View 1 (cartoon, rainbow, N blue to C red):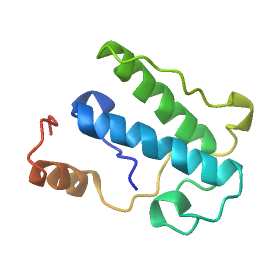
View 2 (view 1 turned 180 degrees about the vertical axis):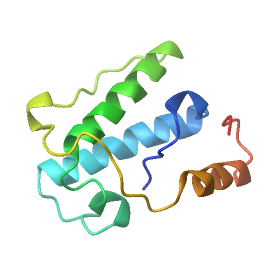
View 3 (view 1 turned 90 degrees about the horizontal axis):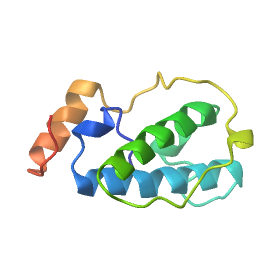
Length: 109
């Protein structure tokens, strides 16, 4: 599971779509108190930061639409509580860029 901290316009389609799918998984785990992946580091870093996760989702959706994808999976704004900004990182931005570079995809990092 991963929510990148890199600007969404830099992500290739594969990583943009993958992040969107995983963001919904993390959202569901946190708002529904689900057990699966609840102790995963990526899930834990978003605990108490649903507003920041919601805002990341808005950025993803704008980019998806810009690239011609249709979006129908909305998040409930009323559940977007907590901090507005993510400040906890599993990997630094530099490390995240290196990880994406090593995947040899079309991400622009």
